[in-house]
Length: 124
Image (cartoon, rainbow, N blue to C red; front, side, top):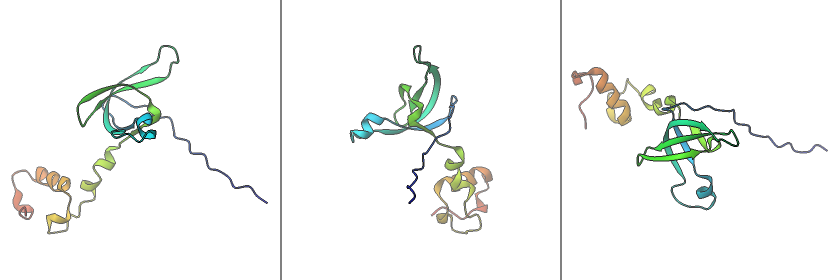
């Protein structure tokens, strides 16, 4: 008889740099079911705790431009630019209807075309 194996999930060590956009979850608020436990932030700086030598981060909470200090990286995840730009990268350019594209894709295309908006159908 074989024992079921549990699969341990190990997260690779990530070093965040100034300007990175991250998702942060406040573990205490999360486990207590309190609102506002997760937010998007921008990394402002990193520093080491004087006693433990553990790395912590200072973030700016983007929704309110609020400073958050001493963030544990175990509760941070990088928000890659490729995910944010996916709708633009995969926009159905052959579609004559701009409604089939997301607003971000349409805005990017209009910017690329400059003043020559005749190449795209009129806005609805």
